[in-house]
Image 1 (cartoon, helix red, strand yellow):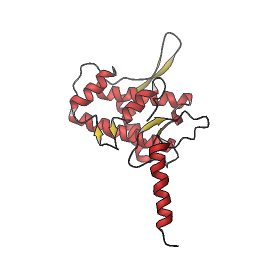
Image 2: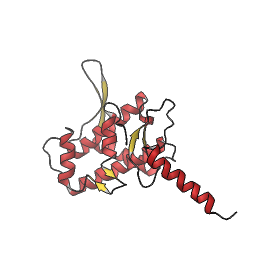
Image 3: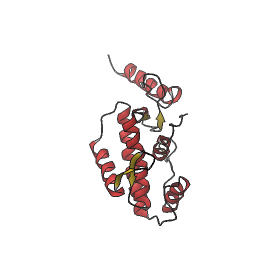
Image 4: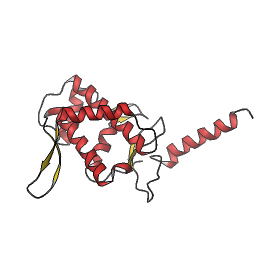
Length: 181
């Protein structure tokens, strides 16, 4: 249904998609779930993860989802941006230079704060190089999946025209034809 984003940006897409609105699946229900997800992606070592970390990760994830909705044309959500900025502060994101001439934002914080910071660093890098605006969230209220827009003119609207696009268009058609004239 949704093509994966290229390179590191896939991490942001996977993080946002840990909650599937359509089927109600929530991959980050418990501290063990969050720890397993972060360990699988090598974002933490064998550190403690607490219930508050799950709340924080989910809050940050939904703020990123809101920002990706704005990439598709929705109004930017100031609260979401504030949430992501707070997460960046908690992660202590710092500019680091590499011996090979590269540079990037790296979290100083460890644990879940640092892991969330690593995800935000990927988002920042994508914004800087221009691929961020191609990562979008389906505006269909029953979907909200993150997808990567590979269309030539960056105009793809839904994760799937056949499913979500069709649902939206049928709903609009019915609304127009049910209204009294």
